[in-house]
Length: 525
Image 1 (cartoon, rainbow, N blue to C red):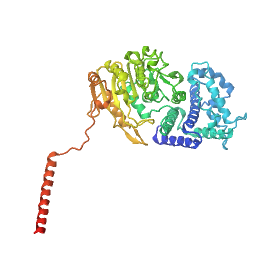
Image 2: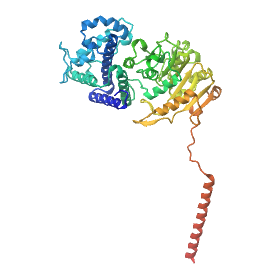
Image 3: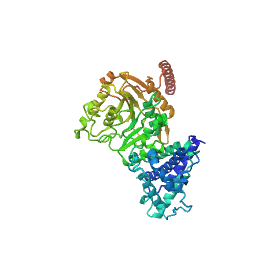
Image 4: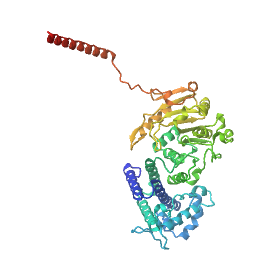
């Protein structure tokens, strides 16, 4: 049964949940997620490497894991050149798994316990890329997986017991069929399930907000439109890379011709983004993820412009703004003639993305609703965006979609080359289903929104085209509610029928009065 089947995917999720449940206790969910993801990643790159070498040999039955380390060394240089890393046969996940006994301990032939083995293996994997083109992409991938961390237990014995549980249960995961057929989808799906599972429990992922998968699909499909391929995809606040990888899922990785580019300020989440790329079989030469503050030190000057930009930037965070005199002359921010407020960087991110958008490109950005109507510097930046015909679509999303907030966010769609001078406003606030104590976009919801945006269709109480001039006249207010009327949900009243009923009630009232008067008169007489 293929991994794509819902039944097998459900079983995979149950197993992952049980692993997390077994390991939770003294260590919080986020820390254990790091260990689960790290072990999952270790298994993936081991099996991925074996599959690659079998393919190079032209023999599906070739078992790299059975080669002596000395013989495998001859292919180290070529393997690193192609895959970006190298693993000795003795250090593959499957071989390390063999050192684990049934009593909850691991002991290698040289006497090393599992924690010592893993420290050495992880160091050797990362070290294999030193001095090569893949060094930056591989360095620190296991930085958040410390086999000797006291978080795993107060003693070596306690830590090893947890590590044994972890590696045996990850090793027992059934990804279905052969690795070549199903492994990539299975590992990627397992990663996404873990991220969602912990984000739904904590509200965020590793200190950074996590964008639900269905919102990622919406953004990617809006940006893709009718295209069957894009050149380069970019996210300046990429988190764990989920928005970037939506393009690989929808178009196929080979149809993102020049690769995936992202920047992330949080070190832990940056490591996860690179792991996520590998888990989805995006090779090191097809992605560039950099750890740095995008507004202060953008890393991809040599790679812009980008055909496709998607992002869910942090809402209303502080930035240097005008306190750094270099910002007003920065080519990313200077065209608007004003900088975003120092206490609200939302439109600084927006201006950055617009600056790096190609002539024929599209950007879809999740925005905090206040940026659509607040005055001051933000109003002036909106004036610049609308007056220069860069705003293509504004979408009002439903409330309570995101794990970290229940506010109703918006999507701002930008283009540099529009054929019309109007803006499509879409009220999708009612497009959701309730599931797991959160609102979610169903496939039907996504299809309706995307269809409306791509075809630029108008529908009463849902979407409306408004000229740029009308928006400018309205104080450059981009709030959807200012242009799309809500349906009148008041009950319709039949006036004629109501008048007949009133006449009947009045007549009945008169009749009762007359009877009461007659009874009173009779009593008095």
